[in-house]
Image (cartoon, rainbow, N blue to C red; front, side, top):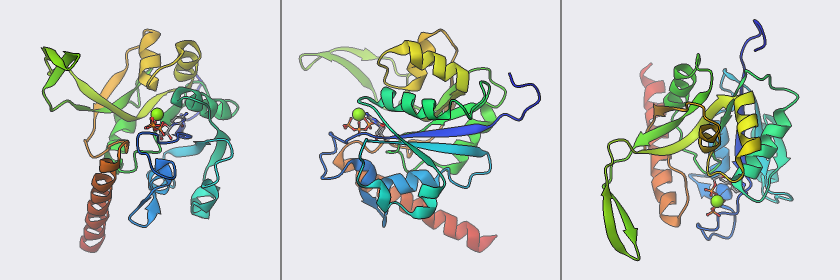
Length: 240
Ligand code: CTP
Ligand code: MG
């Protein structure tokens, strides 16, 4: 721990994927939603937030689309090249923070493809975990009935009472995440790496509208959520 030094928050945005399941002409983080790219919307969730000290955006090497992002957003972040898998890209983002972040600082990893993160969910994650030694993630309880299947035939109905959909941001102490990722091999999210080394990872309940844009049908839903959030923000600014 860094004595009485204030604990800071850093953000890593993995944005180096190709969006193969989306099947669009450009990587999905550069598709346009309501006049701005998905990535620009995602960056606006964090840029200017008073609790955030610095941000790293992880890009595909030679990314030709980044230069078209709003200059004020580009100026607010550092960029680094990513790797073949998401976990590799997150490691690249962490490496960029090594000299700046203290062990006890927080790092929040948030997918570029989740542009609809609510400000109050982000803030609840920060405050709920503030005194935690490890960290945790935003997640939502599973609403659907889940089936296990083999060769297209159901083999079991899985009790859903204790099942959650993992989201991002995933927020961990910098040294906890760096050590866990170094040992983890291929993992699908940061929590999995931290779980593997035996730490207790907390769940903080968020909202289903923090969806990850993955397939073409997700775009319309994300556009609707963003339009609703903008409308609500306008109403609030008119009524206060
Ligand atoms: N990502 C990354 N580096 C990779 C792969 C993914 O930074 N090598 C990022 C993506 O840009 C995205 C986030 O990790 O913001 C979540 O990954 P995913 O939804 O799987 O995105 P893609 O890998 O781009 O999509 P797909 O798996 O369909 O190809
Ligand atoms: Mg992927």
